Image (spheres, rainbow, N blue to C red):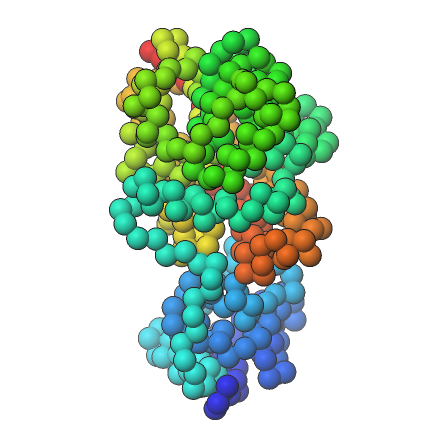
Length: 403
C-alpha cells in the first residue's frame, strides 16, 4: 500500500506494551519478538489488518482482520490461552493516540476495507420471529455436509455425555440422547415435541428406540430437509414429522404433547422472550406432561455479554441466560423443577472432539464453506471450549413437570 510503514507501529507497541507473551510478524518481513521469547506468533499479512483495526477498534476490528485472512496465527490453542490469561497493560489517552497514529502510518493510504462476507449485521427488533430466523440460518445454513465433517454419525449438535464408559463421540452422543429419553420417561406411543430439532438426532432416537411419535421444529430449511430424509431412511417417516417453524407459532395449532425436549435451543430465546418461551411450552403439554430443558448458561453475574465477534460471526443474538433466570421463567409459567444436572466438562470434551475432527477435514471444509467461515469455526470451537473450562459458561439439564 502507498506510504505504508510498519516501523513506527513496531516502536510504539514495544514502548507501550513492554511485556508481550507473543510475537508479531509483519507483511514486510519485520518481526517484533515476544518480550520473554515465548508464546504464539501473530502474522499480520497485509496493511488491511491495521485498517480493519482503525475502522472498528477493539474485538470487532481484530476479528474482521482475522476472518479476512489479514491476520493469521501459528497456534490457535495458544492464542485462546493467551487471551484468557494475559492481562494487557492499562493504556492512557496518550498511549492510545500514539498507537493510533502509528497504525495509520502502518496502514498507509487506502480505502477502508469492506466487512468480510461472513459477517452478519441484523436489523429489526431483537428476537422477533423474522430476526431470529435470520440469526439461526446464518449459523446453521453453512451446509449440512460441512457440519457432517465434525459432528458424530447422528448429527447431534449439542454436548455429548462422556460418562458410563463412552469412548467415542458416537457413543457419548447416544448416551446423551438416551439420558434425555430416560428423564422424559418416554414410552411407546408418547406424543413428543423436539424444539430446535436440528438434523433430527433426538426425534430419530425417540422414534426408533422408544416408539414415540415425534414432531421436530427448526428454523433451518436445510436441517429440516435432511432430518425428514433420515427419518424415511430409518423406517420411521410415519412417526417423525419435521416442520420449519418458530416455536411461538405452534400454540395456534392446538396440538398437545406428552413430553417436550428442548436441547440446545434456549440459548437463542433471549431475556425478552424467555417468559414467552416458558408459557408457550406449558400450553403445549397435556396434563402430567414433562419437559427436559437442556441449554448453555452463563455462570458469573458480573461477566459481560458475548463480544462483537460472536455477535456478528458465530451466534447472532445468541443469549445464554443464567440458570436462575431460566428456572424462574419455567416456574412462573407453571412448571415444577424436579431435577437439575450440570454438564460443563462434557461440553468441553465434546468441543475438543469437534475441533479435532474439523482440523482433520480442513481441505473439504474449505471447499464447502470457504476460508472465512472455516476461520470463524476453528476459532469458535476452541473459544467455546475455553469458556466451559474457565468458568464463564456451563450447561444444564432441567427436568420439569406440570404443577
